[in-house]
Length: 277
Image (cartoon, rainbow, N blue to C red; front, top):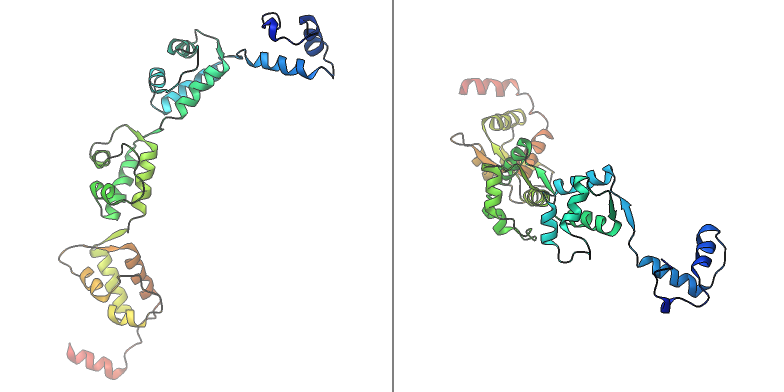
């Protein structure tokens, strides 16, 4: 590098043999500062090359696959490509035909690949979880996108969310999927009040002897907003299943479970009950 450096920029008294001997073959502890600064600058102007090992080749291929990219995609999307780097050069690394690479070129490709969105497999479990999340929130994809106050990822639409549930693709963008689950989790969660839950509630009413109205008057547990006795009456309608907010249902069952069993009837009360029957 000393031999091919511009002679007019080389500090006085610096010779190739001196630099080779002093800084490489037989290191010394002191040198002129201007010589050292100049030498470092000249070295930095020359590219560093690395071996394209199997590990590095596999890492680049893995990043491209995880982000569903080709080398062509990277070079087409890049705002700026390092001087001297072409798509064919990078293809040589992946094919194994090129065993050396400029360090800045190779790691630029890795960085560009990682800057693109990650994709994950849309497994049956993920589809099932997504459908369940929409059911619990009792909201449609259109309403979710239309009423969400937090920023929606660019490119994500209600049609895409609908397709994930009806015609799931093999892979989806990981950041879109994570955003959807988080947005649904922030919505009020609902539970279906079917016959099993109605029977569970009736059993608690019979055990404690407390109607929902009496329970709400007696219970010391703070009621969630919107929890009223007429809401429970609506749940008990056997004609069709109802939907309740999870926090409402959980509060009701917990409040009943904190109440003792109703006292055994006295003989007179038992006799009166028998006569009424």
